[in-house]
Length: 140
Image (cartoon, rainbow, N blue to C red; front, top):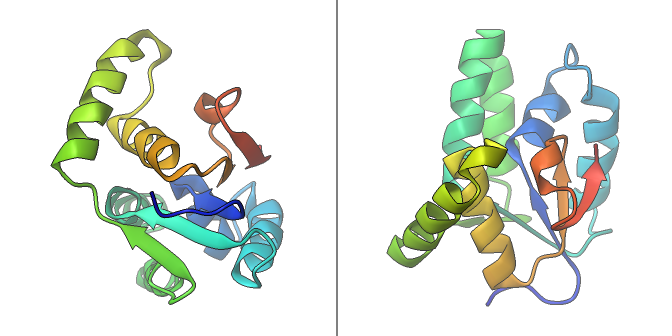
């Protein structure tokens, strides 16, 4: 779809930890995102659902507008391609969500999985164990 051989997807937890020094994964996220932004992993992708989830989580967890703004600025960097979840991805994610319901994945995770599969993106920067076994997890 969009991705070539070298591509990485960045998940909510990685964006959160990258700019929040109090996050337990801050050092790892900081290292991985800096390397990604420098081009080490090729093209970088995330989604509008991840953007929504990340900013909401930043508000709830930190209550710090500066951290939320910093995260937003990074996510909207020209180096990161923001994929919009369209009706096709939404429906496929809905099917996946209910198929994997007992695994307790979020609907946003289901949309991420579909986007990664459609885009042939094999690597993800995340601290979420739901992606293990499906993709190469960088981080956790």
